[in-house]
Amino acid sequence: MNDQDQLIRREAMRLDALEGIGDPDMDGRVAWRASSEDSIWTAAVMPAAGYDQLSMAYDAGDTLIHRLTWHPQHGAWMLRRTYTAHHQPGGDRTRETLDAIATWEQGATPAAHAPAGQPLPVDRPGVHPTMGWAAATAQAERLARTLADPDEIRAALMQQRLDQAHHPASWLVEDYGIGGMGLYLVEWHTQDDTAVSYRVTRCDWDPDTATMRDFAHSETLACHIGLDEPDALDTQARQAVDLMRARLDHAYGAPEDMRHTTTRAGTSMTTAERPLLDLGGGRHATDWTTTVEHTALSIAMGQTPGRSMPAPQAAAEAMPDSPRLPRPSTANGRPAMRVPARLVRPYTRHGRDGRDWNKMIIRLPQGTTVDGRHWDWWNIDRFMNPRQQQAHARGEDIMVTFKPGEQVELWRGKGPQRRAETIDATALCEAVGKTLHPDRDAPADQTATAAPRAAGPELRARLARLETEQPDLCARASDLCMHAIEHDWPRIERLQQRLLEHARQGTWRDDLALKATRRTIANTDSDGSWGRLERDTAALMLLEHITRPDPQPTRTSGTAPIPDAPHPAADGTPATPDGTDTGTGETRRPTPFRSLVERLFTHDHGRRQNSRNHPLR
Image 1 (cartoon, one colour):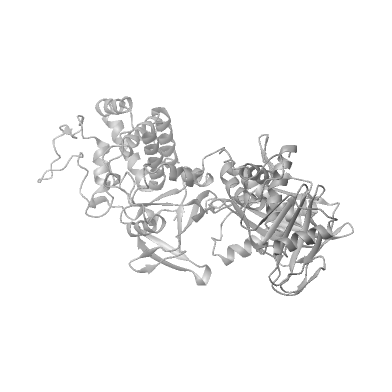
Image 2 (cartoon, rainbow, N blue to C red):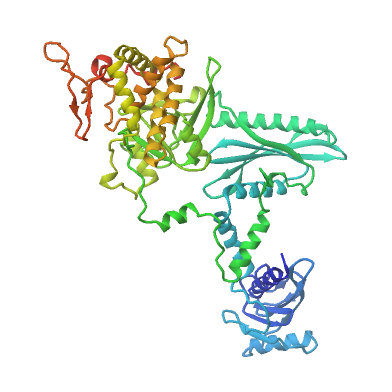
């Protein structure tokens, strides 16, 4: 702080002292106050006999008087002298108090005085804060969490928690979900130059409230490690943290193969080390105490600190006409729900074939009710696509989609205590939406609509030429598409969601979309049974299909054929391959791939429970 800031802080703390804040004998009892240069007096009528903090005795009904002066070394107004004024029946307490001050202060008289509740006359030049330091600091604690970058706030609060730990202390930062990070602290208790015991504490970062809180701690465990062996301290700390992780995972029913991701770790020997303030890339977070003090200075002077970034809640309140959350149905007609990042916990599943799969556990919010039954804190296990991972890392809401008619498995508990039940996806999405957003019903125009046409005219013209000039190639490519849809539908569905999102945001690019689709087809053709031209053509067909403007029916029994697919006649002969008007000004021709899609989506080629029989499920 510079000299001006120090002066503002001193005068704001003076306002607190005049109200008795910080004085256990005066807090809430001040009936009269006075000021003169660098001294202030507070007086209170004592209800019963006793002693104050400086052992001054008083009787019931006496007026206890405290004199405080500024202590520059401690940076606070400190109690210097205390005395009492005995009240006479019918006497004036103000005159009695002033006489007592004159008696004890060698005739000194306060320059300004007033009863509690009335403004004290100004007797000092310079700055005049409008709020006491305690109230300004309390407001700054809340406001500062919305002014700075979330990464800087998290780093500053983690460092503050590390400073509060007993040193030396080992620390470990983990990305374990719930919308943020976690901090494990291992506090070492030493004798001479040897650590003889330690204690592990897990602290959680809550991104919704921007606060750190202690979640769990271990008992004190014995050890014998020299402080001159930092590697041994780090090794023991990691083993202790792994043990706590295992116990917490078992207690809260986490999957057996859940992977914990450690982002940073180290050991601080003294509080002078500030490792967690380093954000990487040349960025450093400001100490939390400094951030709060700078914010409190502005608040104490009646100023509103400027925002370096909009607060999510404040931004939502400032834009009442912004689009509201959609009802549980995405643009492609599938049931969906938006869940806060704090209810989602990512983890990595290790497949038997050695591959890793990104998944997430979604905890249903408290109050979720379907048909009168409560599903509070039941869990859902789903695959997690890159878009959902990015949204979770940013702390944003995550869109979770389901297939129409899908029966979602809900579970809780672990091992013998595990319970699992199924529920309809649409009913679940409706219940979660009502629980999280009870007052945000979507307008009528927010219902499911057709997806925008994403594939550009060049790609559609190219596909049309191939269908006309190389029908045999298209027929072989359609077989590859059928193989991909049958055996890798979850991957294709994730690709479809990403592509449609780019189309809605106006960031669509034909070359990148085709490249991503080729990669999906290549993963399906892992044994190289199809050639490069067949894979390229299959990718073009698949891209045209998953970005069509008309939503596709669900592959369930009894579903009607796709409108623009060729329908067989009553005698079994194929339909005439004439163009079909779509109502949008363009004419579609039946193709081998559209015939394929028709077969896939009719009762002759049902879903076959792909999601349940998928090798990864």
